[in-house]
Length: 168
Image (cartoon, rainbow, N blue to C red; front, top):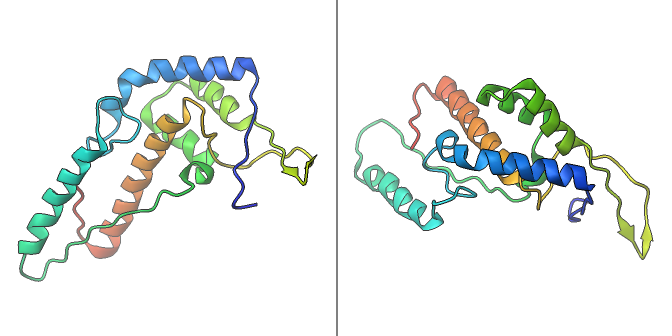
């Protein structure tokens, strides 16, 4: 099942709620997501990040001494499918969303029931335990939030283990 992309059909109420919430979040995204993040943010271009990467790598080539530097790229393949709903809820709290809005968002995220067509027959419905729906207007924003906090936790764990890690 790991290579299948489930398509979930949502009712009109869920689609309407997610569209309204997404339209309200759009203006705040530039403030909440770091400048280095370009995906799904209006007015930011992926090409700008090539310049940022070059600016990060240039001083590393010139550095001498005992201090180690590291650049890491993380593959985000199937990132939508891997998002933990508990982590998403924690992130929404950390960002400062009101509990009533968090409850509505989590209902929209967790209410999907999926089915798979196999040799022309539909199998039984099942409820996913994690992931965001691709095509949902909220999913890119949530992926940005989750990614931001995951990177922050990842860097903090590296700082604790290695002593000092700087991020761009």
